[in-house]
Length: 17
Image (cartoon, rainbow, N blue to C red; front, side):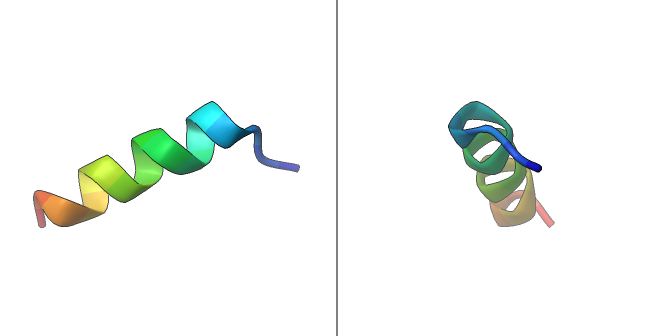
């Protein structure tokens, strides 16, 4: 289960790829 913050952090990290 992901929290909103974890999803947000993941999305931000994905943009850096």
